[in-house]
Image 1 (tube, rainbow, N blue to C red):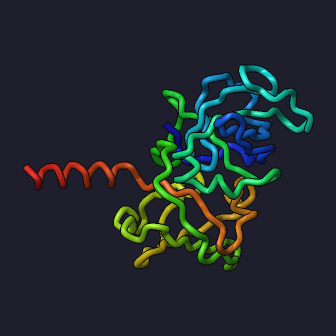
Image 2: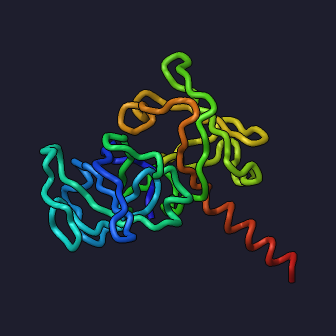
Amino acid sequence: MFTGLVEESGAVHSLDATGGVIRLRIRSGVCSQDAAIGDSIAVNGACLTVVAIAGIGVGSTGDNEDGDGRLLEFDVLEETMRRTGFASFKPGTPVNLERSLKAGDRLGGHFVTGHVDQTGLVDLFEKQGDNHCLRIKLSDRTSIRYVVEKGSIAVDGISLTVAEVGEDSFTVWIIPHTLEVTNLRALSEGDPVNLEFDMIGKYVEKMLAARVST
């Protein structure tokens, strides 16, 4: 479980497939400090399991030759590749990182599971005054029913508040701090982003559907 409060913006070191295994290596400073093999870390909102750290662990590719933080390594499922925008990763691509929530921690964002529902495309991203307006078009427009004005949504793992809802898109506003500490600063129109809708709405829909069917 995560909160959608990004702890750092890391960078992709490599993404490759060897022997049928898709291995993602991320350069990290903050989240790698106390990371252990088996830990869950949200990468652009997708919950992944650490399988190696800077040369520690089975299948590791070696020490961190970059000298900038440590390398966290993850095995990525084909389902994750299909659901997310990971296919667009290149060396140096900035990614949002968040360690899993500890019992007793402050919940400053909202409950984020790390299970990406779908990708969206940046339809508009422009500065207006001191802030930025970000409009995202859904890849599956029927999912707009999960997006509620003034509700929460995770965009690349960032907990954001929905400002406006359209027929197949929604708008959020980005303050300067969020732009500075996340990968949003590198976004351009047409870029894919990972989306996770508020799980409360999905549970309510399922329970109501079951109630009607009975």
